[in-house]
Image: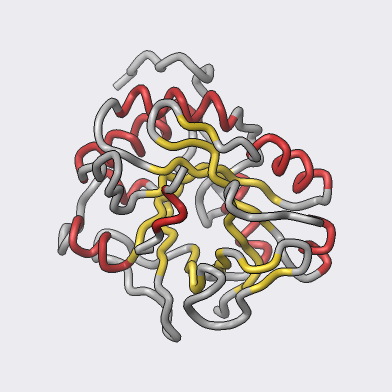
Length: 240
């Protein structure tokens, strides 16, 4: 199956003039920075969300990770993201030189808590080199609950660690480095991403957090309350 070049990821560092133009140019979905750590909120998140969804684009939110206070980070992220059932969530797991890098165990806890709270798998974003170093040859990790979004600014797609069968999204450029095209109408230079499948499968991922259409979602826990347990390199992504 081919790669669908139809996703962009944005933050307050991007200037958006028209999401309608971006959609007309072939963009299907947007994944936007919502939060970082336990206090920072992207000031453009709500405005861009309303405009993108108003233009008919799919919407997703990501949280830029730092070490420490994982429950606090999850609370902050889900409170700000204020998710609708048709929106993606992603943990941006990469080096954080200013606040400290989240450990593997912390990332596993973040993914697990988010899945418990929203009732479906979140995504995991990371660079190929960093993720390979952190996860290594492990075939079992709680991170594998998450669908995988990998950054690799090269002419060939990324190679996931053994814990995943494949990647779902490939970030192939940050708008400057990596393969063309780097720009999108209505936005200009930005991070661009290719989906590993067709648009029907992409919309399935967006609706239930998996690539399967036969998934029944678990009940969502109230945002802001923990559930009762039954059983770049990318300097500018994390820059405030």
